[in-house]
Image 1 (cartoon, rainbow, N blue to C red):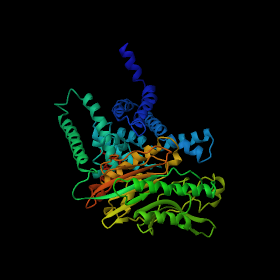
Image 2 (image 1 turned 180 degrees about the vertical axis):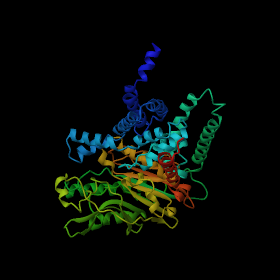
Image 3 (image 1 turned 180 degrees about the horizontal axis):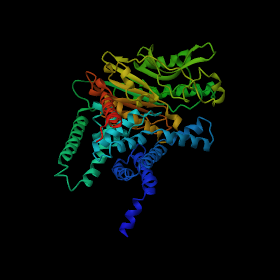
Image 4 (image 1 turned 90 degrees about the vertical axis):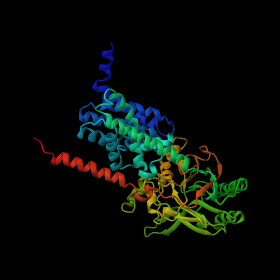
Length: 526
């Protein structure tokens, strides 16, 4: 009877179709919304079964695994397509399925590399192949396996050395080690003792460094640290085309003055002193810079309380020859005197959400697309804002905080902390807002700077330089505020990652590609 059960479990159909579905479930269940990280330790068992398949069937199985991962992790895409793309249910489901089929083709490349190099059981080699495939695979939303470690922050801390790609290496290695130990339990102290010692040392270093970093990088008040008070305003502003076109002027004004009132209350209730008030992306329905009756109350708020104010708003630009006006998604910063100090125009725009690809080349495309799709112009400058004489902060808008390496274009060494303003209202009451936080968390650890996240509809929070959430997580679709004080080192932190960036993964890519070329074209056979 036992032999029959084992035989059925090892049948090709089970390995090709059942195992990849279960493997995909293990992956997305480890991410935000579920955070069941221990379930990933089942993944090597399913992968090991799929590795016995013929190459084409194995690659198909890995593709199924990727598709299931995407369906579970990116289900919010269907909501966006229905509510803001105007699509019927089945069409939106088709969009989600199409995205899921092609978003993580790195899994298929991973399957190929494993087979090409002989299905090595060494966890380090398996992880290296995965990181190669993950980095060379283009993605609409930068999704990295290493983000699954955010519920086990002790394993997360080496991101300041090798970034989020390095965390993917850590995650894949860590979940494969127990399975490797079980497979090689008879030879651990004989033929496998060197690799066994290497894995033990790897875990000791990762855990030891993680424990040290969690102790070192904190938000505790201490001599030699400088303080900055923050009031974050989750406005819960209504989601409307072009920031309120379908609302009446009175309705928009009422919403705006309510934000002023909410900000004043937050400043007054701060246990210390607020230095900077931050409003989210899309928090104001009016182009702030174009209307004095909107700009003036914000300026009065700043001057009356002696605070800086950062407010997200659409900004109107010049008209082009085509007659189309330029629009910018802008974060406008006012100083303590109520004067517009500077601004940051969002650089990385979301296709079909903030701009229409190829519209300038093919203007007729606009006639075929829903009116809810905007067309902004991307910014170019990457400023760092001064708050006090010795405190500076770096602005990010929307999903710019999930793009590995994007911050490198800023003068980030001068920044004491990052501020990300976002309007995650597009996602509805789904797990997407929490997934956004998970994908943004590595930035705080990579650069060892707190990440302040202010969302229009939630969930807003503050992450310290070890990636811990040090404020409350606000609810979705509620108006709320967060008052907090950051205690920052006198000199902004510098990390290995901030200096060398993704160089380690580029070296790994060159090594694996070189080995592939040698095996493919120059291997000498007797």
